[in-house]
Image (cartoon, rainbow, N blue to C red; front, side):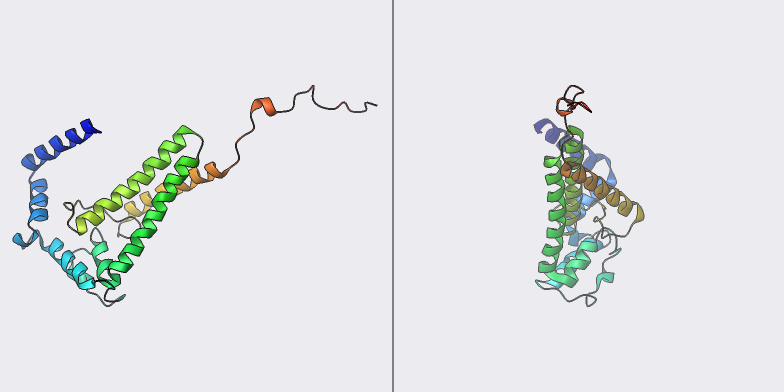
Length: 197
């Protein structure tokens, strides 16, 4: 993990200096109100989350249209404005339950491939959600990822449905009884003789 973290840090530093898009996203992340054009989406997202407060403005009573492209990567700010902090935490708890059930299925399944598949898919779902919420709330630079099952986008929705279908298949495999071993199968010597007195 240390080597991976160091390689990531070096790659991020090099990308920041080589690619203009990465430089712009990091600059907007650090100083969103200094960039009226490129930082406008993040500014409006923060205003929307602040307007929602604790309990929100109510469903349909907010103004998510003030955030550019609110149905894609900034849909969390739209929900945060209308359902508030309590509603947003409840929504995130639903995601946490889904992710934790995926990890539980990975622990319960007997084959090693199923364990790796379920834990990897659950981690992927959790990472995607973390990156989206961190980007909207300015904890991390915005990446443009979509929120699973909420954001507009056909390919993202299909990919997440496939992800959940695979988790369901692993969970089903974990709940099935273990197959009987070959040694517990009856042998011809154990079978009773037909017609024996």
